[in-house]
Each structure stands twice: as structure tokens, then as C-alpha cells.
Image: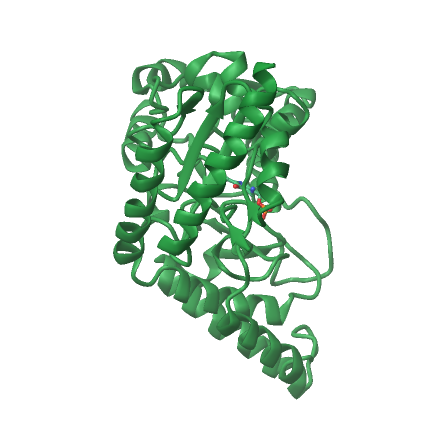
Length: 377
Ligand code: PMP
């Protein structure tokens, strides 16, 4: 099997699985219980949280556990909107966000919030002038992803923050950092809130994090009895939290070395795919090397992906593509419906080997030529 869909999810690391396994067996007490088993579980959560906060550069009480980035995004955007609606009802987002952000924006729009979209250039970089122009005294929130999930475009968050705060010091800045953590260095202090998902960094599914600066107020989305975990009441998933700490620790190790290796693999793929007439490279100069997006001129992406699967090669496409719709991200960059509805994503990991890429390229050629000749008839 050659797995090249690491941006969709990653296989769990055996070290992380081991932490999960041990914590599940040895720390089964409810951390909300008063007895010693409960206290033991609570202590494990505290030490995991301490480790995570050190690794991310936050305070311990700025880490909130969620089920994944979708929930973190909901908690951030809806929580901010509810808490600050009296100040203003204007929210700005980029055109390169994950679909979960747009779904939340749609929900907020129905509640009477006004959603604005920040323009970007053809390489996906946020248009700073447009951002500046669109921030008003009513803008309560701006959300810009750190790395876009389809094309891997990385945004300069620090600079974006400076612009936002200069225009309106009360505007809160959120970033979906799901595709950035474990791939490039992230600085949560560039933003007020940040979303993360642990299954993207070789951890288990079902656990995510919302970093929320202590200076920011959000309204809880769910109600419960817990006095400590006000934003996420209920019994905390002890073993998932322990596994998250391990996954983050391992995930952010050796980033430069991993990136250099992945860049070489990506360059090899790009140089070969550039030889095909009907293939366009969609990733830009701002894309991180881990995510390579291409469009196929004459072949439906889902047909191509299933044909590659016959060789046990697993690639990604955006969900909109599979249903024949355009990718919002590709439209935002190229405004070309055909290109935006025919994209395939090749996402790489430090686990990917040169042999895998060689085999991938061989199979790619076979599949591409076969399918391309069919469409020519
Ligand atoms: N945001 C981004 C940028 C993502 O790539 C993803 C996962 N595709 C999500 C949010 C949703 O993450 P989760 O599966 O943890 O809810």
C-alpha cells in the first residue's frame, strides 16, 4: 500500500498508541471523581496539559480539549459570536478556509451575523489592503487558516494579526492551524484562538484542541455540570488526552529535517508531472511541500483516484470534487470551474519513501495514459 493522503488523516504512531493503551488500562477512573482513582486520572490530565502547553507556548488553562478541529472551529467562531454580539455582528474569513468554517459562517449568517470574505492574490496570499479595508468597528472576529488543507498555502499570521489589531484592537483573531501543526512551526501567540486536530499528527481520532487566550471571552456551546471544564463539560477522555500530548511532542520534533526530505519528494513529483500536457499544478509558491494539488484536464478526479486504488495507491480529492462541484479554494485562486472541479491532492509525510514515490510515478503514468486515451475516443 502507498498512502498519499496524509492531510486527510494519518496512521497512529505506535508510541502514541502505547500511551493511549497504558492510560486506558491504568487510568480508568473518572477524573471528576473524588476518590484516589479519580485523582490519579486528573493528575494524568494535568501533566499532559502541562506538557502540551509547554510545547505550544501557552498557559495550561488556555488549552481546551475537543473532539477534533471541526468542534474547535465551532467553539471558537460561534462562542466568539455569542459572547460579542453586542459589540458587533461582523465576521471576516478568508476564501481558503476548511469547509467546516464556511458551514459555521452559514449558521451564523442565519442568526443575523454578517459574513465578509477577504480577497487573496493568485498565489493564495491574503490581500492585506482588502483586509484592512474590510475591518470595521463592528468586526468582532477574523478567521484565517494557517495552512490551507487543499493547496497547502501558508498565510503569514503575524503580519495579518498586526493589520487586524491596528485597524480594530478589539477584533479577535482565530486561526485553524489543523494543517500546520506537525508540518511547519506554529506560534499560537500570533492569534487569540487556534484549532488543532490530533488525528492529523499521527494521533488517535476523536481528540482536538482549542487554544484560547485568557484575554478572550467565549460563550460555551454546551451546558453541563463541570465547574472546571466550563467550555467542554462532561467526563474528559483521559487516554485521548495523554495520547494527544505524546502525538504533539513527537509531531513537532525535527520539523526542518522532515520538511527538507518532503520537499525533495515533492520536487521529484512536480518535475515529472510537469511533463504531462493535461496536468496543471495548483499548489503555489506559498504552499508547504507536504501538500501537492494538481488538476487533470480530461479525467474525472474520482475515476482517477479509484483507478490508482487498484494499485493500492491512495490519493485525496476534495469532497466537493467527488460530487462534481468546484473546490472553493481553487475557485478563489484561479476562478476556473473546470480546474476547480478536477483536482487531486497528493499529500506527503516524513514516512513516505523515495521507493514509494518512484512506484507512485510509474503507476501514475500507466493510469493516466489509460484513462486519457479513453477520453480521447
Ligand atoms: N480544518 C482543517 C484545515 C482540516 O484540514 C480539517 C480536516 N480535514 C478539519 C478542520 C476538520 O478536522 P476534524 O476531522 O478533526 O474535525
